[in-house]
Amino acid sequence: MHKEFLMGNEAIALGALAAGVDLVSGYPGTPSTEVLETAARRNPGNVYVEWSVNEKAAMETAAGAAYTGAYTMVTMKQVGLNVACDPLMSLEYIGVKGAMVVMVADDPGPISSQTEQDTRTFAMFSKIPVFDPSSVSEAYQMIQEAFAFSHKYNTPVIFRATTRVDHGYESIDILDPEEYSTHDIEGFVKDPSKWVIFPRLSVKNHALIEKRNAELKNVFSEYARNCIHPACGAYCDSKKAVASHGANYMYTMDILKKDSRPAVLRIATPFPFPEKLAVEFLQDKEEVLCIEELDPVIERALTYVCGKYSLKTKILGKLTGNITPSGENSIDSVSGALADFLEDESIRTTSQELPTAPALPVRPPVLCAGCPHRASFYAVKQAMKGRKTLYAGDIGCYTLGNAQPLDMCDTCLCMGAGINMAQGIGHIEPDTKCFAFVGDSTFFASGITGTVNAFYNQADMTLVVLDNSTTAMTGHQPHPGTGRTVMGQVVEKVSIEKILKAIGLKTVETADPLDLPAAIETVKRTADEPGVKAIIFRSPCIALSKPSARANVSTKNCTGCRKCIRELGCPALTVKDGKALIDAAQCTGCMLCAKVCPFGAIEGEEGGGRK
Image (cartoon, rainbow, N blue to C red):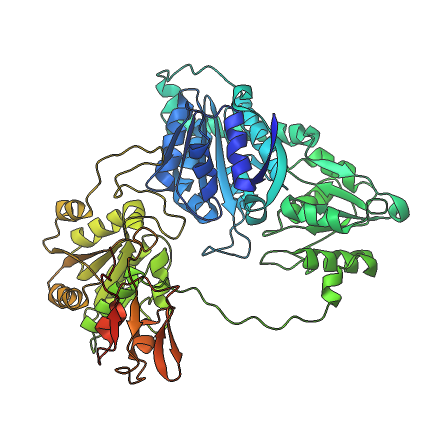
């Protein structure tokens, strides 16, 4: 055993390796991404790791391996669970032979997601046990316990961490590789009565699931991480108490004084809820404040327990307005709620009393300087000037095309949805030229089915694949079009062109968006073709293709018209003394601005241009 300073996601991965995991699959998405990356990087050599094409594929891959008796883990963020829930709901009825942990990273805030979903609520809906860690060190230990529970009860379990645990850091003790757990893998044993889901099997197994979860209520009441911290000091005789979970539990314990605090119930397994422990906690309490995010899971569970056991305790929290109903809690918001509840101003954090800091400048997310997507959007915009158009966006770097001055993202719902939404709008408004933008990674993840649907149902739309040869927004993970895997294997690239042509598309154009005149002409030529047609704008992400030289402005030729700034919105372009100025620290030498300048005032350095 040795000590390391680890990010929460690194600790989760190393905990899984310590538990003896045999296979890890997943799809990248903040704040979960580093779990799988760490599993690949710290692989002791006997673990199979893959970035799957999407969360559904990852879930099914992990499930198949778990049918053999292997220990598996699948990783995703909370919206990725939506994609994976179809197989997971059925898998709960089938069960597993080895062990399977579904690591889901929730994103209160949300900081980098479309929605604020609470996976604890999904666990109740799906009837799957869920583990909810509070810290980095606990995440390392708890995921090992999650594997043990999964194996013992032959069920997938959910390991639900949040951004503050995933991206927090702590110095913790971890096992050396030679200390990792090992287990035998029996292999897949054919048994249709067990592995083939039919209504009769589902009815039988549903009854067994309910019986198991009733048992787990008692088991989890004895689980050491579900615990009651007794009242002490001035609160020894207090009839008020607090219940919490996850990072909020850490906030609560940090705020309350160690030698004088009310009783605190910590819930580490919100489903099945540790009912027996809750009854013990509530027996002599008049009021309990539930501090949690995002859904009132603990609050509802304690309210139910009070009703079931005829307890008079008043349960407070989100439903009563004592805790904000949405968004991420903070040390300040938790201390304020505790101070109001306990009528103790001494525990309200002092940061609320500090002088107000000056407002920070607004810094909206934008496409990077030199991003080829900027050129792609600009080419389409110029080609379709004066025409009624619809630009359906998608999830990824290209979502940032919505920002001014590009303004090229009219809709954005979820991964892959833009392709189908463009079809829907086009069917109702046939006079609208509908474009759907999708990235190369997203095309493989969830764009192919929408394209098939468009071709089959005779839609009239233009698919624009923005191929920058990586999964850029989540950290440049490989995908089927990159020709490499997370384990370092060099494999044959999957061709987007061949897929589109195999579907049946007659018009599939490939263009370099940084060759602006040719790109504009490609769009004009393609958009008026009937039916479904596709343009692949292919140019590498600037993180993959470094500049050899940069652009500069000739102050003699620059008239100060600011067209380059007004039309492109590149962060490397600014103004000084009424003239355009290029920030050499940001410029990548893409030379798009030079093609836009009407006065030839922007030039490249000798040998310039992107390599």
